[in-house]
Length: 68
Image 1 (cartoon, rainbow, N blue to C red):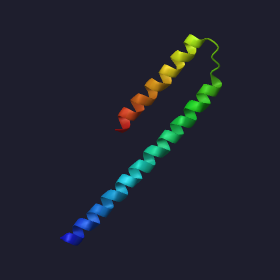
Image 2 (image 1 turned 45 degrees about the vertical axis):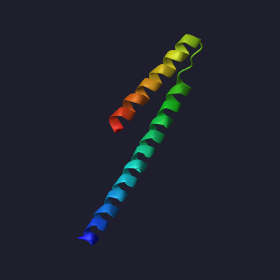
Image 3 (image 1 turned 90 degrees about the vertical axis):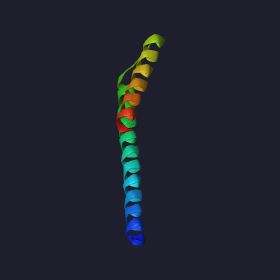
Image 4 (image 1 turned 120 degrees about the vertical axis):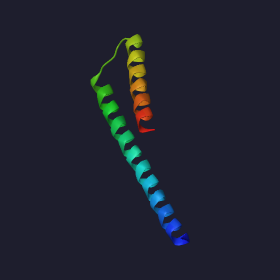
C-alpha cells in the first residue's frame, strides 16, 4: 500500500509540473501575441493608450481566470 501511495504521489507531482509548464508556455505565447499586437497598434493619444492597456489587462485577467 505504501509503495502504491508513493507512485501515485509521484504521478501527481509530475502532472502538476506538466500543468505549470503548460501554463508558462501559454502565458509566453499570449505575451508574444500581445507584444505583436502592441507593435501593430500605434497609439498617439494618451487616453487611447490607457484604454489599450486596460483592454490588454482585462484580456489577461480573463485568461488567468479561465486557467485557474
